[in-house]
Image 1 (cartoon, helix red, strand yellow):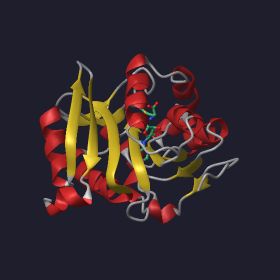
Image 2 (tube, helix red, strand yellow):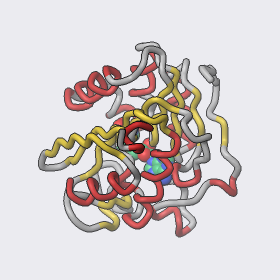
Image 3 (cartoon, protein in one colour):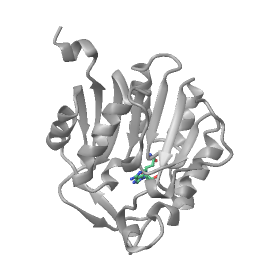
Length: 226
Ligand SMILES: C[S@@+](CC[C@H](N)C(=O)[O-])C[C@H]1O[C@@H](n2cnc3c(N)ncnc32)[C@H](O)[C@@H]1O
């Protein structure tokens, strides 16, 4: 699976749902801002670097990692350099191309995470930096359930999401007047969603803007209660 692709593979059109204002017939919002987004996010900040170190410390050597909403491939490149076998998925075709060019040992798929279908237990780790908040709130439990299924028992899941209340289109420095869909979360709600999908050992970290967590997919002996 450690495939080097010149360009992202495109999932079947019927598999790709739309999100945000793309539902109204516009193009993928991140396709419109792919170059500027990628340039401004070439380097991980200290919070992301610390989370990456903590994440890989919990993975088996050479294990399989999926990055959901991989953007420009910044974190895929890091995990690849550390010897992990990586798959990145993203709904922006342009960001997938940028990721495939930079994370040369990763397999990059142009795929909406709501439509992903990986065999159960395919991955040792699932990473999703700053991406899950673009789903509608009602969609998050279904995607978290899919993430639980694609992980092995004992697998680790990291995600960071925008913190706060409510959901809707938000204007930011990239999207300007059009806005982008954001659902905001607090730790308590995320904890309930994660527990409902069988995640254990939840570790949250919260600041003014972000809520981040590490979670473990219950091991078989955790489930047996032995
Ligand atoms: C704020 S960017 C974060 C990118 C990267 N993970 C990072 O930390 O720099 C959000 C990413 O999620 C992707 N995304 C949003 N909704 C998605 C979905 N339903 N399926 C797959 N990717 C999605 C966007 O295309 C974008 O690349």
